[in-house]
Structure formats: structure tokens, C-alpha cells
Length: 327
Image 1: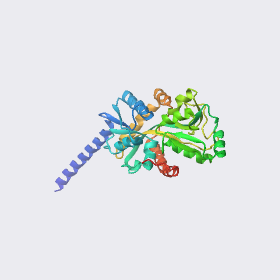
Image 2: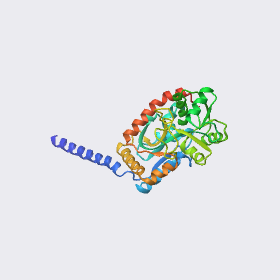
Image 3: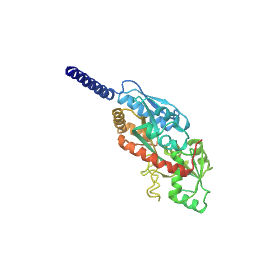
Image 4: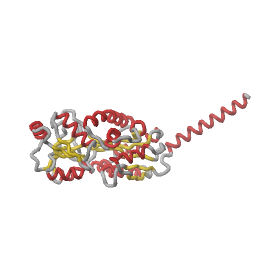
């Protein structure tokens, strides 16, 4: 009996060692097959371009095979849904952003996932300042001009955004609150229609991501009034921040980062984070991201998770106060 017990213990110990080695091997050998990077928007947009910069460089430098897979629809939430429901093996990730990961759950009814419960933040990639702009023919040249006009004519000054409930719309709401003014929000179905109407003077202001507006700003057709981030945009170095323009402490931007399904092994999450951070330190990668009007920014897994969870918690009240809903 005693001998049998020793034998069973030895077998169990051997099995334990085997399982431990296998678990370590999963991370050490990762990836040993192609990794799918879900892009929750159509090809050619800002998220798609950013995802391809990262996936191509991971393939080139890290010798991984990372394949972008566009799964567009419902403001990016369809692609996020697919990622949240994927097997937590490390072979499915998604390039999420603040709009679909943090704001989407408060805007769309009955989403089959919760970002905190169903997703793991893996690697922060970049953030995008939001720019307040006008047509060059507009009488508004500074934030002070806009605030003065809005206070003199409450509910008359209009601003266009890419749509209800986007981080850009939310930025407009926060601008109103910080400045103590009342603007009229004009939502469009995407950035380009809002841009066109701003150029034509059909709306007084354009609230836009820097990548969407920078071409017309550089061409001299739009006047950049201010950016909403804490730091000036490297793409628009002469444009002040809203904080510099008078709204102290104002800091709003949208961010992009990689997520995996909840339950993905921590060792794999850590490995992907390290590889992405390594890429973000490369001048050619930073240049490629900044060319799109975004700002590369690496973070540890813990720091990205902390930021993501804080944004998700704070967004509930902000979205409710904005009145934004998407049916």
C-alpha cells in the first residue's frame, strides 16, 4: 500500500511537472501559427491603417504572422463582439478604440459582451487628439471668439461631428460644460460629411479627429482653433490646447489599443505587450503613426488596464448627460 502511494505520488509529480512545462511552453513558443488581428472597421480608415502598421511590423521584426481581418459594422462593436467571443488562446486580438470598447456598451442596447468582464487590455498603441476647427472664412479665430458668440447667442452656434455618441461628440459636450456655453450638435454619418459641411460653412464649427481634418488644415481650407489633448499634437504643433486657450485641465482624446478575450494566458498577454512596446520605440513606426495624425504611446499591461477601466467607469455619466443613444 505504502509502495503504491509512493508510485502514485511520483506519477502525479511527474504529471505536474509536465503540465507546468507545457504551460510555460505555450508562452515560450507563442505564436506557433498565424495570429488574427480583427479590425472592427472597413479597410482604409484610421483604425485599419494603424492596425496594419502594427501587424506588418510584428510580422517583419518579431517574425510573427499577424493577419488583419476587417469585421466592420455597428460602430465597431461587431468586430469587438467577435473578439470577445473568441477562444482565449492568444490567437485572436482586436484593435479596439475608446469609441467602441468604452462608449459602445452605453450607447448600444443588448451588446452580448461587457468590456471589463469579457476583454483583456493587451497593449496601448496610440491616442488621437480631437481638433476644434472652422472654415477659414469663419469669423471665429480663437476659442475666446467662440465662447463669446455662444454666450451672446445661446443655442445658435453649431458644431458638426461624425455622429451621436462618438468620443468626438462627447468632446463637444465636455467643451460646452467646461466653457459654460450652449452649442447645437449636428451629428453626421461619418467624418467626411461633417468635414464637407464645415468647409462650406453650413456648420460653424467642426469637432473632428486630427487624422480626419489634418489634410484640409494643411491645405489652408480649415482653421484649427485648438486641440483637446493635454499636449499639443505633433501634427499640429502651432495649434494650442484647449487648456492653453483658457480651459484649464481640459484633456480629452480617443485611444487605440489591442485587446484579447478574457482568460487569455497572462504570459501571452505580457509577451504581446512587450513586442508592441518594442515596435512603438522604433522611429519608423512612430513616424508612420504620426503621419496619420495620431500619437504613439506605449504602456505596461497594468497601466493600460487602469486607464481603460477608469474611462469605462467615467463614461457612463458622460454618455447619459450627453443624451446620446444609438438604436
